[in-house]
Amino acid sequence: MRRSALTNPLGRGFYTAAEAARLIRVGSTRRINAWLRGYPGRQIGPLLTRDYHPLGKHEELSFLDLMEVRFVEHFREHGAKVRTLRIAAEQLRKDFKTEHPFALRDVLLVADRADVYVREVLRKSAEEAGDMRLRSLVTNNYVMYEAIKAALLPGVTFNPATHLASTWQPMPEEFPRVTVNPKVAYGQPALPSGIPTGTLFDAWKAENENVDTVAYWFGIGSADVLEAVRFEQALDRTAERLAA
Image (cartoon, rainbow, N blue to C red):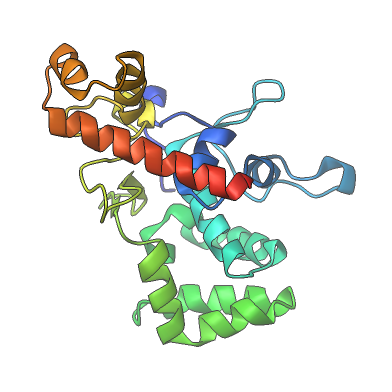
């Protein structure tokens, strides 16, 4: 069976539901909690199989959990029904023998002409759930390929042994040097130096927005500090827009 996460628990990444929503830039804390917890009052279980047990009322996600939430939220934005994704997830877990099928290269590359099987699973799941919109999206290979290529594949690298996502650049075109790596800074977005962008952003605010002072204290270039600040500001702008 494919390993669902890294051997060292400190190398799996740690994210609250709010942090996950902010990073993927299309989600909400409420929805992410629902994917992880399900709806006990309605006797509906979780959509995703997560790596960490909740701490009381607080959810904690691993890097692979984050990648799966990103996949689910992308298809939700395209109008896919949660029931469709639930049926697909159950089948893919069984066939690929992993707890994180929506973080697999095989599934993220679902529109690849060679990967007919995964397309068929999604199409059948859409039919069973009465989800005509996703069925159409999956059936039209060109549309499906373009949708995934534009929203899910850029910035993701995969472990060649497990085929699971290993690192992710949240905004590869605007900020190609900012990477989310579960082995670095507990999975927080970081520059090549390994310093989290959030740490530099907080320091920049504490130093009255003086980029050079922050660069001096951390022993990095001023351009790195500025990139971290702009990245964090971009996340904040999206979060504010979604909350409006």
